[in-house]
Image (cartoon, rainbow, N blue to C red; front, side):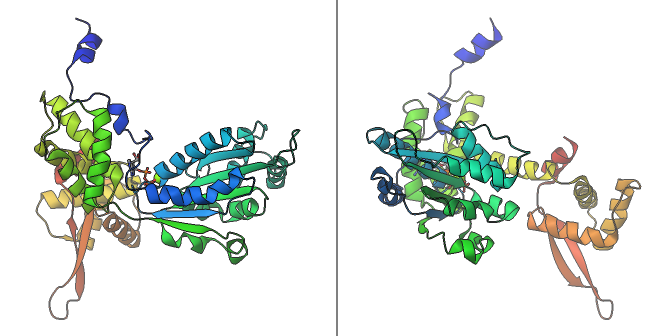
Length: 381
Ligand SMILES: Nc1ncnc2c1ncn2[C@@H]1O[C@H](COP(=O)(O)OP(=O)(O)OP(=O)(O)O)[C@@H](O)[C@H]1O
Ligand SMILES: [Mg+2]
């Protein structure tokens, strides 16, 4: 038997796992009707030939910001097909296009203008972008709605120049999406005054709302009757604790299904959800460790070594071991403190200041906060 036939024919609890993928945009977004209507209420202006006001969306991770924005874009595009106005929506993820230049070049390219991603002056790109809004041959005005997802990244990276340019181009409306309420601290007053935006807040999902979301998605992705009754409520409860993150809830559900398949089980059980949680957390820690700079990995290696020997870890002892491991290529004792702080912020270790007894001063005791076997695997992968 061919290995692929075998795998293809393998029985699975999934009907179609694509529907649990992050990139899939469902055509129903339960518990976000209000936010979708709020956007539509402003954007409807575009269908009357008027540039809509700018909008800002805030909310923690996994609260549906990207999904709702894309959903609203799709709906507007459908509605504008039946109208005689020239409305365009463009989605930009600012982790992909991280500077004003890149975003404007991308927008120009979407309109068929051949702007290279480097080499031109900023003024040339801005002029080309603005030329898009000259009346076209039909004398129609173009109205452009730009969705700037994860805008904090761009503002931190490149300042507020992009917002300055866009707010000063007639017929452009911006929808910004941010994880942080205070992202406007990156915007200078001169730009803030022209960004007269309407704000829409996305609250975290509560457990019952996550149940509804998971129910919708599971109908598409799982075979009938394979989910035991406690599976969805458990995924929802665990994700509600993680700040109402729908992405995490979907990850738990998908991973629990994968565990069922791996174990050859016909049904997804509650215990698989708990296993899924462990698995996801394990992977998260592994990712963090593997992407650390190598000097920091060595500090962790030293902490692991001392932990396994059952030694109390003081900064001095840590530096000794770190230096040995580093074999000549090491940083100063002072720099180690920065590393220790960063590792603590990442939640990989904890530190505790203790007094060494009268007159002997104080010292820092470092403790590992993740599983030694996880750390070992990640460091030697
Ligand atoms: N109301 C909802 N109904 C169905 N699926 C949802 C809903 N809200 C979020 N999701 C799904 O949860 C996942 C995360 O949502 P989304 O990417 O929109 O979050 P986000 O707020 O943009 O998060 P981040 O800040 O991390 O970018 C996506 O797969 C999305 O389809
Ligand atoms: Mg998003």
